[in-house]
Length: 259
Figure 1: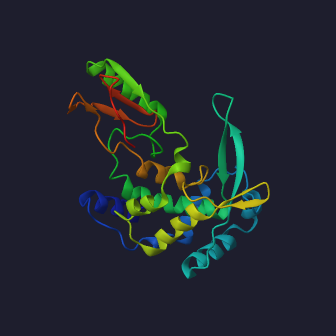
Figure 2: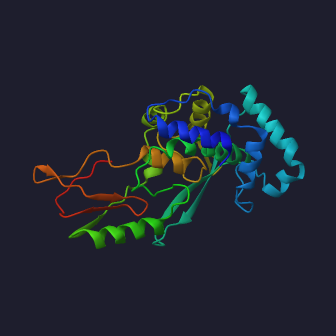
Figure 3: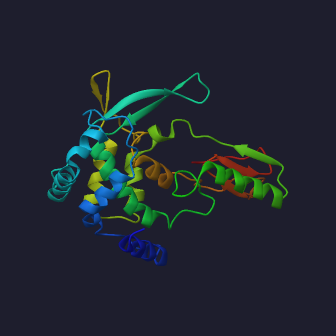
């Protein structure tokens, strides 16, 4: 993590009420370059068809131009390219929304900034879409809790079409608990409202953030979570919730979850 982002993380950790008003200037050409280097070079292209191989032919010229557009407010997010891939069960298909290469670059650079802030707010039991945490880590934590405590049942909960069902107005309110930089908020607004191209038509939805966008996992992780404890027999005996594998461990089936 860069010195600047390390300092941002320290400030966010020291003051959980701090709201960051000016971080967009940290989206420098160097930050964009590092973001580009972190992308999968063989990933599918967006609606403009631009690939990494093509972009690299004049990489610095393109990154400097991209930075100029960001700085001047002329940057425009492109619609997402909608494709469908089989789900794990092989029966249903998952809609994936592929952004253009430049949108991926800016989103990744922005995610690096936002992670420095929002990582300080996540609970230790949160594993989904977090840096240096995996589903295997979540499973290991489930195993440790089961070994340490008298657990009778494991409740597995899954939120159907979660990325597509996020309420954007509520998401933006949550983001502003920590970040009120107008430029960053405008970027996020562009990405979640940009629409998708499917069968040659532009489709604009009212909810959700495209699964496949670089920014979406962070937005989903920050907007998700258990909002109320699990009420059991008039009390609250919620023990542990580990996301990433969507497991809430409780000692009864008579529980209600509100997400």
